[in-house]
Image (cartoon, rainbow, N blue to C red):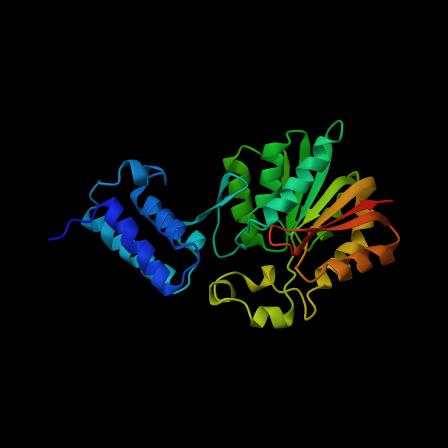
Length: 290
């Protein structure tokens, strides 16, 4: 009977995923193998000749099948890497994308230019990736993170606790700013960040199967034009943001002009800027509260 080693499995799964058209087939193979074997990815190469037992092969077979049918690797293994952090994830949460790391980077750079403790609001926090990344990289931040999904907040809570941030990140369940309203003694924020649902009706129909069939629609689809959440944020954010505080939004690749106009109409923001991602698409809008 043929003996399967880590190296042989890694090569076979990579070739299989390539044939099936999966994105990043080598990385996907590494993530599944390291998960099943309970090894770090680097150990797949330092222990490449290690034989894999039958029970592990059976488990791996099931996971490879799920991945080949389109289920995202992150949901299969229950974790995702974001801003050099390993975070818990499940189907109740949108999978964090590398583009959202730009949002975190802008937020951290802004906070590091400020003095004293800073208050931050993270809207649509999902699995808590943005809030946790900011808190891990800027110790003087106190963060309120909200999400309309109680199920997503349970995952966010696990991530907050896993990094020992319970005393600095306060999770609230509700729609955008709604859960913050009752806390009348809360001071306005120095920074508001948000990666909201921004997919339009047409874009949602055209999404890849691995996204449309598995990730929560409520975290993707916003409205027919994709701008509804931004309208609501533009309307309410001035009430929650300090003068010279900053609003940072992740946006869709066609939305820069429209969102700039939304913020300009409020007459509450200045220095409104749209910045590109690594693919030269509109990705981040920043605006300063007058």
